[in-house]
Image 1: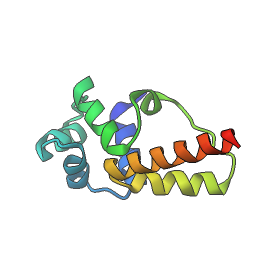
Image 2 (image 1 turned 135 degrees about the vertical axis):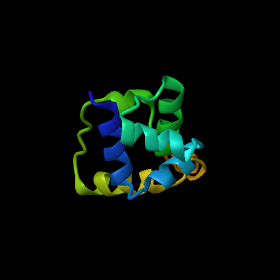
Image 3 (image 1 turned 180 degrees about the vertical axis):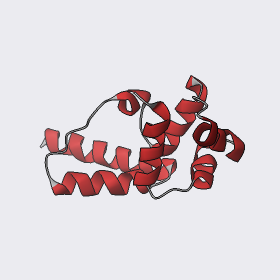
Length: 105
């Protein structure tokens, strides 16, 4: 897997600039720029910060494909990925609460 291409694809999916990726992942702009301009492969720690910014796990990052069954799922995931990490956490808690409640009924 081309790690830098995967990061770039995820960044572009969100409409983020390199600056925005650096800001969201709490990395310096030079660290992120070097990744793209010089092909510097990120350390695991750096990659974890990037994944946190994207709201995905390392496992999801390295997963080759994710199959979504319909347009509603595609739209929901797309909107979720555009949220900042604290807002994503709220969405996860809300959906877990709703799922738990549905199973209890």
